[in-house]
Amino acid sequence: MDDISLKIAHRMLYTIPTLIRFLVSEMRQAENTIIPSQFGLMACLANQPCTVSELAANQGVSLPAISRSVNTLVERNWVRRIPLKHDRRAIRLELTPEGERILESIENHMETRLAARLENLPLEDRDALWRGWNIIEDVVTDGIKEGKTSL
Image (cartoon, rainbow, N blue to C red):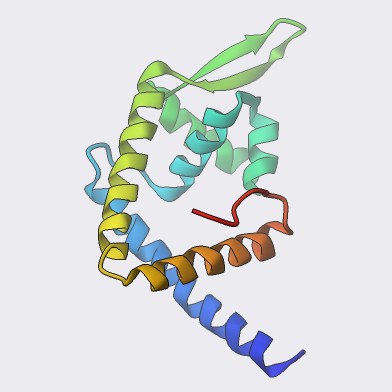
């Protein structure tokens, strides 16, 4: 392993948790308090309704852990359970209209707060950060996403 790769890995290891702490703090200040794991579940469901098992696999957590989070989101009326017609024991989860509104509100709050901090950077630094973030995203997602090369 080359020295620069180790240095980058070290910086990522210590910088990303700081970013996460910032995001968690901002989530607590949003109109509707939400924890990161719940935000992740709702963001996943915004893309496509899915079963509890699919959601657990997507989020990389156990069924009992996902069930607790789902129960909280159902109690808040942000997610609903819909029995599958071909298997009444299985359910599909989807965002409610209220859940969609809450998710959009939190996304807007978080993006506005982050953008305000980024706005203080010179344009060339923001361009460099955009390019760098695309690289980080490719590294951690194994290049799954496409079309992120320009603003």
